[in-house]
Length: 161
Image (tube, rainbow, N blue to C red):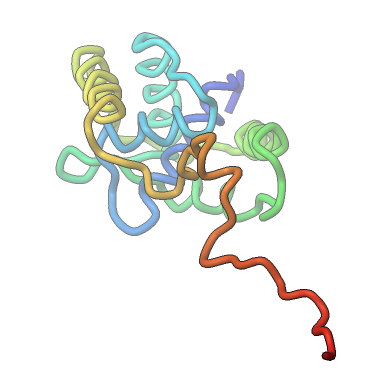
């Protein structure tokens, strides 16, 4: 697969994260892209990346949801488990450059409007009233100075009379 773009590797990693157990919807893939990179690329670049990956037989579509093809799963499973994001993207890019497409592939490409709607849905979900239970709770100034539980002053030594 030539040329290999950073967004192709990022999209493949995000799809692997979002579609572990079942094919992922577009807004789940956008949430994974945002989690991995911290920002979501433009709809045009994402559409081009979907087209390139689909053309080379690395992603597929099942009932409007997207999943990794077996060749893409082999690329993802070959990555080191404890690598940081930059190393994982570099590993995926190396796997993509070595990948050879086999025969004619069915294209699974969302439209720009579908991608825009998925990005908007992800951003709306992030601004909602839901809480992320994995985030630590903020501490106020009062709770930082107080000790937890009941605390009493230790008794001094006893005097004999």
